[in-house]
Amino acid sequence: MHELIIIGGGPAGLAAAAYAVRKRMDALFISPGLGGRTRRRLLLPWVDDYQVIVGEETIQRFRSQLDYLEFMRVRTPATGIEPIDGGYRIAVGDGHTYDTRTLIIATGSRGERLNVPGEDELEMRGLCYSAMTYAPLMVDRSVVVVGSELLALRAVAELSRIAREVRLLAEYDGDLDTDFGQAILDVPNVIVRRGCRVLAVKGRSYAETVVVECSGAQEEIAMDSIFVEKQLIPNTALVADLVELDPCGFIRVDARNRTNRPGLFAAGDCTDASAFQVLMGLGDGEKAALSAFDYVLGLPVDVTPCEE
Image: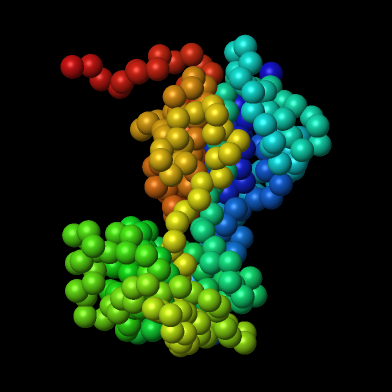
């Protein structure tokens, strides 16, 4: 039985695995690839590579610590998790199973897609799903945000500080009529279009226009970039019947990344801790690994460095 198994190869999983290696834990790292969403970068015609600090470069040091440790890598996706006496049994796609005392879930999340023509071809070529990451590149640009919930409103709030013009295309009212929504609607460079459904994204090398239907009429809107901010979908199906999830499906964790099951921890974008940036994910992964290490050592659960 291993001391620790980590599922997920994004920033949180990489950091957890690197920490486990430094602590000389008997650990296994289950992930078909390394880097998660950081393997992709948004390409824009006015931005050169040197102007962008991307996650791939930030996490390279963690990848290099694991590249030579092939004995701890399992490149087949995890397909099932079963509680067993003293830990958990992990099944993977090739039929093998692995037992562990502790487990870290770092499977990340994904953005809800538009599912319209042009999206696949222009994804990460002017079209992406994270304004939080790429807003600084939108200086004096005209951008479009698609969505109507809090995620979209937050994106508009950030982009409005940088871009020349921000158009919010909201198919439904969502959170537009909340206090926060109304405050965003009053920003001078924000244009809100209610009842607008995206039909297609067009462009040659990059996304250039978006085709929408507003109140039954179609039109084409030109823009420099489009951000789809409809909803984040956590990749938590593996543990949906094992741990407590919030209403959106994210894993509930405490301040030490513990779930409601002993020995089962979670880190990064799949948790309700909102660690949706690379550096936050790295720190979250290390914190989860530290908690798993303490668990293996038998450290009291609620130990504190000082007493009243």
